[in-house]
Structure formats: C-alpha cells, structure tokens
Length: 138
Image (cartoon, rainbow, N blue to C red; front, side, top):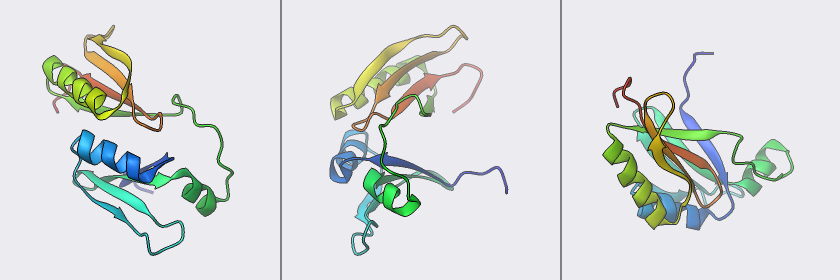
C-alpha cells in the first residue's frame, strides 16, 4: 500500500445541513448530493486539492456499509487540519466558520510551538484546526 490518502470520509447526521455548512457557509466547491438512486448511497464529495476529496456520508450509511453499530461520536477521535499562510488568514477562516454555524472550541491564539491556531467544530462535532505554521508553506 502506498502512503497516500485519496478520500477522507466523515460521518454526518443530516446530509443536507452538512452540505449547506460546507458549500454555502465555508465555500467548499461541490456538485452537491449524489448517489441518491442507491440505498445508503447519498453522499457529498468535495475536492480539497488535486487527488484528495472530503466525503460527507450519513453515519447510518457508514453503519450499514461496515456492519458497525452507530456509536457515540467523539470529537477527539481525529482532527482535520487546514494550514493557511498568515495569522490574519487563521482569523478570517475562524470568523467564516462561526458565521456558517460552526462552534468555536478554541479561539485562534499563539501556540507553544511558535505558530497560531484555533479549533472549530462543524455541525456534527468534527474538529477542524485552522493553523498558521511559520515553518511550513501553504
């Protein structure tokens, strides 16, 4: 297996609400909900960068497909990181997320390692870290 990820799928409770949050609130480009002609097939794909997509898929559909029971979600299971090119851009993305309906978990702040970051949760509790790292380029 090559160390390459092509799709990150996150489970959502309300696919239409999640679509509005990511498309309308955050401005992520998408063709909307596809796969509705299949039982448990409705999904939203969002192109993040060449070769990488974010998929929004109902938790019930993930449960059906995998055979696992839907359990309680934990925001500390994983985070999604979005690196930007400045502190000002961190603040702008955090503001945009809040206006879209995100919950600001930790406001943007200077970090112990010399960067600047903040956390928000989407409508289903998934944690996004918006971060400027002076050691990385966007």
